[in-house]
Image 1 (cartoon, rainbow, N blue to C red):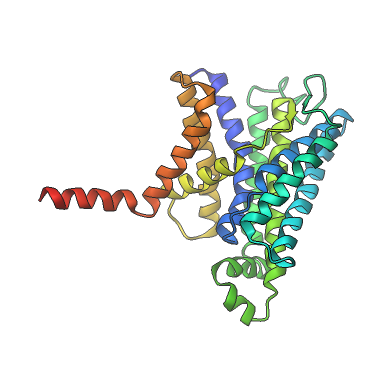
Image 2 (cartoon, rainbow, N blue to C red; image 1 turned 60 degrees about the vertical axis):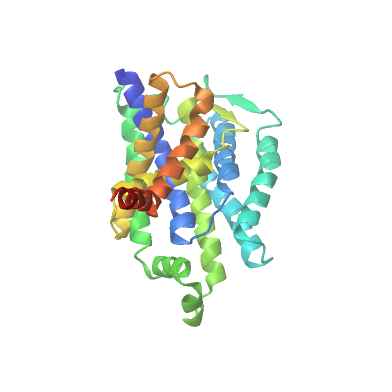
Length: 294
């Protein structure tokens, strides 16, 4: 692979690491399968694109996080106030976000940012690795901030809510608020990932969020398959590693000649293999075979 391909892989891996850190909050910390992700990622790209067109790319990143958090809050309210199943709540919010994202983009399914100034525009003249450095500075800062937050009293309450909701409720902690907070934070990070992605790729597409849930899950599961540590900081690092590794596998497959249309299938297979290896299904199958042979 050429240097350009490797750099591109690492850059996209870093961007999807932000997405995976958000999904880590909902999927691993809160234990909620939140399908809002596909919609909130596109929400981030849409908001970022519109701010970039108006020469405010940095503000677009921040605003994407805030609006993504609002989307997560809506899902949280559906779960806690209306008592709708988390899976269905995410689907409902994701479905509604499609129309909202299209409206934000002025009913245009695709917006080009090639002639616009982004957070990466002036970096190419500095060094070839400038984009990579900026992306991973953001990733490292997010890992540090999340690690610090999840070790605070509020963060511990959030983690306890995902581990044992009944126990947390018995301790006079409002579990509904914890769920809303967690889903808001998760989707804020997902939208931020979408915002960075739009400016990195110089376009925003209303369908860009399709399959992002699988990407995030693959990153988390693959990363934690390699790094099996219980401490929060190691889990966050595992998520980042998983995102980069996952993107590397896809790039390698493309280099071998795999048609791009099969990437989603490959992503699903990676998740299946990772989950199967994690829950011991593959090991048990191997043991049964050895037992039969003996």
